[in-house]
Amino acid sequence: MFLFDGKYRLRVQVTRRKRGVLMVGKAFDRVLAIKDLATKTERKLIDGLLKIDKGELIYLSITELSARLKIAEATVVRFCKKLGYNGFQDFKLSLSQELGMVDSTAVNSVVKRVALQMTDAITETSRSLSYDRCLEIAQLMINANKIGAFGVGNSAITAMEVSNVLARIGISVTATPDSHLQAMIASNMTERDVVILISVSGSTKDIIDVAEIAKKNGVKIVVITCYDHSPLAKYADYVLFSTRREAAYEGGSVSTIVSISYIVNVLYNAIYEKLGPDAYERTMRAASSVANKSM
Image 1 (tube, one colour):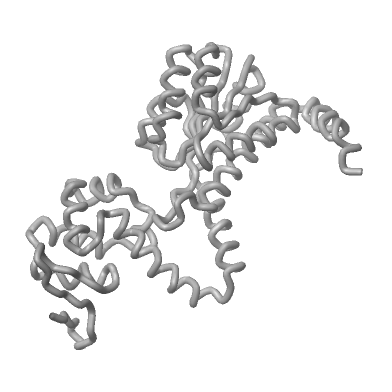
Image 2 (cartoon, rainbow, N blue to C red):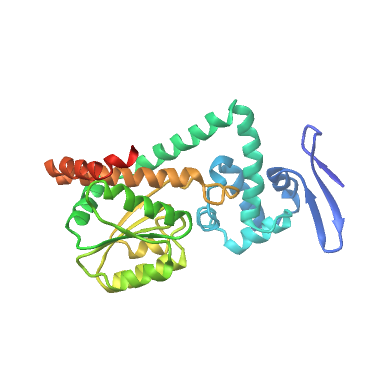
């Protein structure tokens, strides 16, 4: 069976199978095609989806969508399965790929498109970043006895960047990708120390475990994440938000990494400002220590 829109253009193919209906077509074509067959709650969900910009929808978590539309997460999942997807993430994946094909025609080259994505990520992050708060964090780090920076996966790479960048200004930061070592290091930190925890989702179990340990020891906790209502944010003394612009198909968006790197560099500048005249001396000492390495 074929379903058509008002202009009689083919929208989506629906075929029968033993366990229900198999839908074939673009994501929102399927949404519209099933509207007349939807339940009252599903129609509320469909109306809500149609009001959200597609470019924004692919970056929403199922929790955010559920809260915005006041519809249970389980309902969203069931609806996506009715459309022929494995769940909401799979629905976003399909939509992301469709939008990606549109973007590739709108922007003449991959080079320009990637540049725009990164620029947008930094611009979006800058809107929510308070430099005054960064100055407060900078003072904490200058006064700290020990500093740790931890993350898992791509966030572990960013944590290493924290260590590398701040070493240039004489701030020693311990960073390791090993979750066991992270927990052990946190267990020996005190109220005189600072730990920076990085998690895009804010729900990475290993990092939450480290946060629990640090909190018990009175360690000052700085969290860098995309989600303010995440489990990790609840442990933080300070939260710095990076862009959420990570589509389902990206699996660790470069844009998100760039936005966190931007935050790290703002923190560097805040520390530089707080150190005053000593900042220049520190950077010169660090630079001179490796001056002969490039020969």
